[in-house]
Image 1 (cartoon, rainbow, N blue to C red):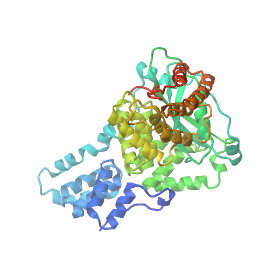
Image 2: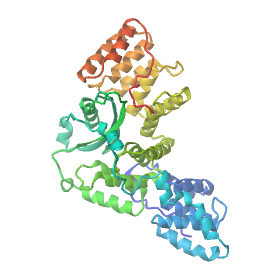
Image 3: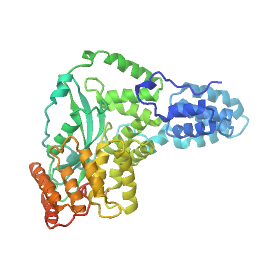
Length: 472
């Protein structure tokens, strides 16, 4: 009986935590009921191999009730998504279906919500070009274009080692044109304690954007590329062969290979392909339940990275759904980004507790942004049930273990936590250091000076230290 065939040659490229592979393992163990549910969840995301497996299991009655109508429906959908065995199974089922009037119409209803067209409306990035931006959209994008970009020097250690990379960094632009809280959403090659992350954050904080008096904060994302000596792909021994193998397995339907290939397209500066070619491959990994692919797809939909223009309200809904799927697999980047989204505006206690839970999980996996954001919340959140200044100090120290650099945020968190714990002398010293850094970045000093005055008066300051974020 033909069943559940996956290309596994590339599975060792990354840790085997993909749901599609896990579902296959569950099936091989004989737990057909659980395997069916896992395959069905992935089939509803548009994964063609999972759709084929669901069709086979409906046809044989393994793990679910036997139904040739359902088998035909999922087999035809797998065929539409490029799986040739789907059409073969569907044709085998046609004689049986012909005995039941209207069965093919019923089959179409079964999978109507999961066709490529339906998923493009509810879950997947749009494949067709978007309309030319209208003036209102241009006005929205303009604040994210720097009028003065600070270009950091290429790090000496990476230059000597020939390392290079690409990063997508998110941040907030305030109405005065200054920036806050830069954090890396995507980095390739995968983070390896290089200086690229540190320098990118410094660049964001020192860059300037056009002032927008009377407006509010704006969420932006910027793409950075570090190229060592402009080396081409041919100058890297084995790179082209590795790229060829990744592309071959990805095209053959291996979702882990799709993740690797998409990451290479997005992250290796010397490749000729445009980085926007990466997103469709990352989506394939996401549809297979691979957490890293789900996060990359969700972050792309939220920021508009890798697509034509910035994300619409529909794209944001899609992005949040992918991030929830990644967070369900305990992906720390997804957890941190969801928490950041949850804390926008004026969240109630339940929303803050959910955000803290996500940040806790991200921080437990040494996620720098999760540690920083959790420290800010625990240091001075207005609701007493949330605050934990002692832990905030530990988290802030860990998040900025390489030093705060030019960013005053860590010192602001430190000062607020000390004040909440009653250590006002330390709070004053930390706030003064934060003021010095903020002055160097031409920030609005009034909020920092107000906090300093409270600490000097031996009073804590309670509020949202990251309250400059764009409203929800």
